[in-house]
Image (cartoon, rainbow over all chains, first blue to last red; front, side):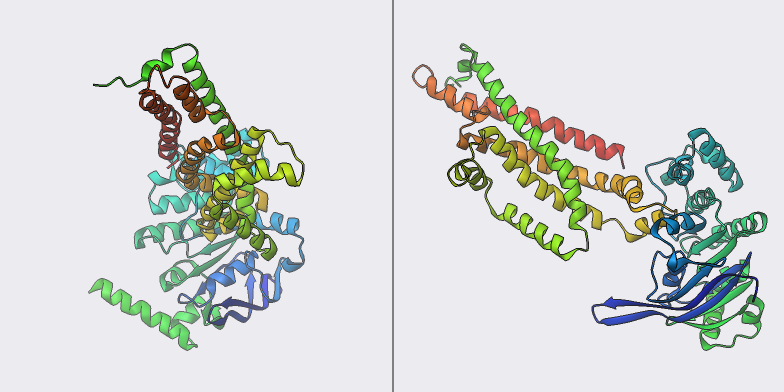
Length: 257
Length: 224
């Protein structure tokens, strides 16, 4: 593929636990095209969080290669990596805002780190809060916000660095279905208007169905199958994918009836 | 009711003596507390390092401080070093050294505990925003650590202030020693002075420590 943007090449990651080593990632290779919303789905313990942390090197893989836009990430110096990370945004399940600071200063925070003057960063932060629909909450504290609103703040904060990649680590898993939907719509809108490549890590098929174009199914630290979302839903090849789909159906049935 | 003996304090310069004794105690504890907090923060960060040698060194340091009674430390530093190394340490300096030695270790351990109680994801999200190690500590980890540290370190600070009463054993006339001297000097004229004067000493310690506890409650409320 010549439009590949992010390449993971034979990534391996081992942890040493009390009862022996755990192979979190076994020889994982993925190619993610530019401007996609790419999903990674798997049950907990499948290795998806570790995988996404390898993309911005919060975890260093024991073997393999990570290439983003032709740049080999593992060969960057500490400082180069830090600057590269500013362009790889990441949002989390529990938002991780600075609880003691207002919404506005939370969004200003990455700009402050980059040494951007006060007036400029406030302007930009307000603009971003507008974009995520929280402009009127600028002076509130995170504790005064709902989960969905907190995630919006986290998204605004991450956008402050003008990222070209956005990693979402179970970003909607702490939210109710309604809020999940709204956050996913926001992510989609951001993707469409800003041209950001989005990688979504989740254990919910609904999330994949809602916004992803392609998906990788992960189980036991291995990629079981990769393909477009419609392929996965109409013709799941791996047992892992079928199991995930089945799980979802059961849940739906329980929810409805 | 018997005479409580507080009247002794109104004789001559007695109350002034007591207060200057209090000042000595406060001075020693304040300086030691400041040194302990500053260096304790650094030691605490070092204690969380993965370096095994550092870990062992700080472990031993902490154990020494925990096991050794403060008075023994005071004696070693003040009397011991005079013969062995020929140092003629000023008593107050020796006291500040011992209290700081103690405070840094305990403060360091508190900081270590607070640091490891901060979830790993806090580091990760800060790193993901493109911060370097120093920025992560300064902007994200330290503010949270300090909030957790306040009640614990206030406890340590008040303990340090109270324990300064030991420095009279190396000849420093702090508030307790001043009180004793006043009582001794007036043994004949007011034999009941012990009760009144020590009660006043108690009150003085209370007046020093109580605002600190109040401050801690205030800070905790403000920052939570």
